[in-house]
Length: 133
Image (tube, rainbow, N blue to C red):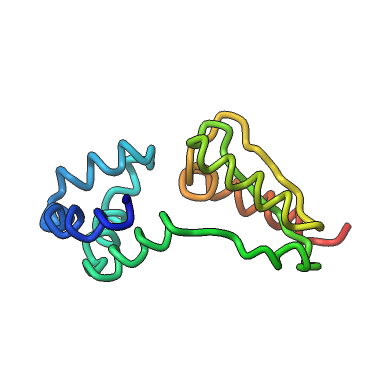
């Protein structure tokens, strides 16, 4: 049902994407730092309607492939403790499917906060995870 509504609803709301006040509302809802407004507005207002609809449809319909259980790659799955339950469940599902995965729940963080609002910490911890001792 959600997938069927994405096209018409987003098409009707698409003109709002170019409004600064709307971008401000989106940023607050996404908990993005205020100092990133210009970058956020520039990038989000440049997204074509068809691309956004395709992205939203893919997000709502995503199902991990069962053959992920055969993946041998070392995988780090990161999710914020304050993310929506659906996101935390998805992270757990991926972790359960991927045999060489590590699931890391970041205390106190919402969706995207780790990499967007704390990029120095994100890069430092990422480098520590991939750099041999």
